[in-house]
Image 1: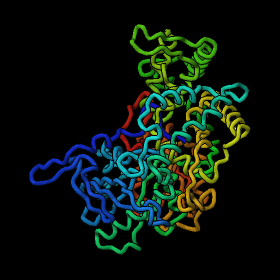
Image 2: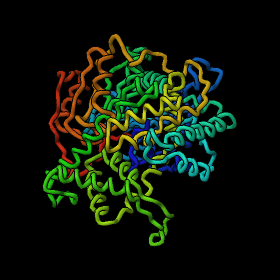
Image 3: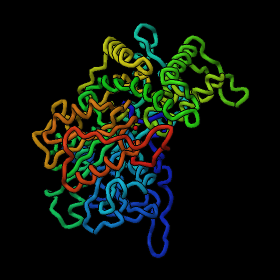
Image 4: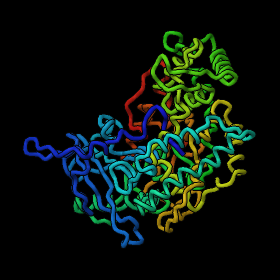
Length: 543
């Protein structure tokens, strides 16, 4: 599933600048890209990007078959302002799949201290197959025309189980897999060895290498981890496979891991209409000076939105492009629904933009909506490669009947985005891949993941309304890990951190890191309100 918004690219692509040469300043060799950093089985941190240190960690391609050779994992560290030489490090994954932790930490460097505490080091990484790490490959081998053609063919907008759109999307779903299979066969024989269980093993290698670097036994190494969105899949997989290695683990915006590994995304739409209703409520409460789509009641706002949707459904609007120099396009209700879905990722930023867009549409200007549906296909190949490799042995969405039932389910659960959701997450694509992966690359544990007890309990976190990973996922995952707690933040949007959290939330987070679990059933009161408070620069998924 895609766990990122069309508004925010998954990666800023620091890898693009990895060819920049190292620069010597005041006797220090400062590097600005991972190509300048040696790969080593030991953590050899070198100064990088002015305020950081970086390392390329050598890891086996397959931990059960060393004859396949090794690959490299890019790590980046921001030393805490008050951190000692042996300070605890917190490893962060921003989500995805395909999200770059390197880019995230470079972008949000100022937030690590306030969120975690200045006594800790913040470390992130690009998982295998992502950006600066090894096993990255391009399914289309640079053939952008072919990729663009597939996007237009395979992203029809709304998918209705009773029309040919579902048939077209189902059968076109095999094309991406065919291109990726050929790329692996011809150019990257281990390109599919990028699964979440392999990433978990890489994290074990990292914490052991870090322990050794400060003179501690490898066997005593514990993982301190903050995972967002897809990062919660990494976290629960880790905790299931290596429960005795959990030092601290905060999982924010929790994915139902059982549905992830079986490719049966069903619960992810259950709070989408709540999100839309909250847009109307917050707009009304903010008043006409703060919300341009304001009306005399929340019901009035919702009714006007409904009329706009009906009008676009009955009368799509053609844009010739003659006045803008852009290509001709047709703005449909699918574009509006896609825009609404993406606004739910970060309402503090995007609810005001959605309000502005709706006002413009009422006035006949639909340019903001042009190309929204097509943008769903503009994600890096790593997103599909990792998701589909993870479902290799358990994919339940392989037949047309199964896909039809899935579409009927999502449509029944959300009248605003239920019929656009299958196009957005595009999980049917996985039926076209032929991975032939060894057991060492696939998750072998029970579903949902469980443990008899982790070395330290897990802290699950969720907003009261998360339209991408609803709170039911946090509650379900917590049941599998005795002693864990779900900490709830009153807010709307995807992940607590991405909405700015609250003093209450971060106080509990700091106490947890210090060794004190929050009491059960805590809900922190809302701190930042859409239309009133602006967006925040917080630790966010790249998904």
